[in-house]
Image (cartoon, rainbow, N blue to C red; front, side, top):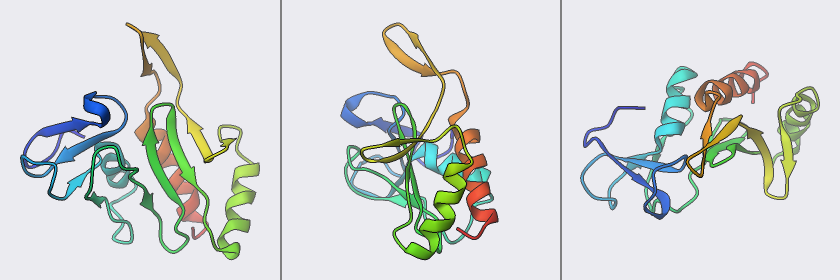
Length: 146
């Protein structure tokens, strides 16, 4: 996560946390990476089918999608948000995996892979490695062709 051409990290709403952008240049107007998604992408072997580059505002949702299913993930304050695949052929496989996992929570917005956290100085801080947890989940999806 400590990579980047500029070394500049920018947090959504001007706060460092779990929704960051890793600037390639010195301005937000260029292409950038989400350091959490980038670290997850690297951990699963940097698949060419997924694109860890983004543009837009730091407050925009940044989803990294798997091919061919378009299953998406993104870093959120409480863990890793998971977007189920839209196509029925992939959704059935996704739902069978979800049923066998105890660490996924269904929410109004989709699914959440919560990360264990502890309060420190008024903020929630991960006590579990969100990159490793998300990478493990994605490896499971990729193993079944999602």
